[in-house]
Length: 87
Image (cartoon, rainbow, N blue to C red; front, side, top):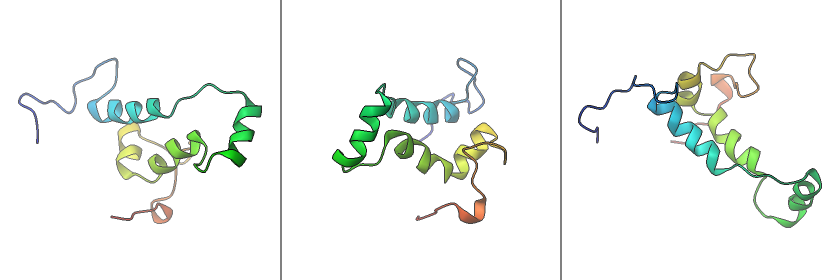
């Protein structure tokens, strides 16, 4: 449900509401660990590495590509035809 006076183009800190949503998502997956620990977690943790858990879904979302103007030169770019779209 849209909020009264919601402006999808309002910038806060230079970012739109949609961009801030994606930045919040990325913030949830941040971690500061050594390379050694990250490699250790590959064998101990049943979950994928945090960078993949963050960037994998986003690179498949058209909304992410549109929000940030992701170009074909970007590491986050994925051709629309190969993006996973479950729903």
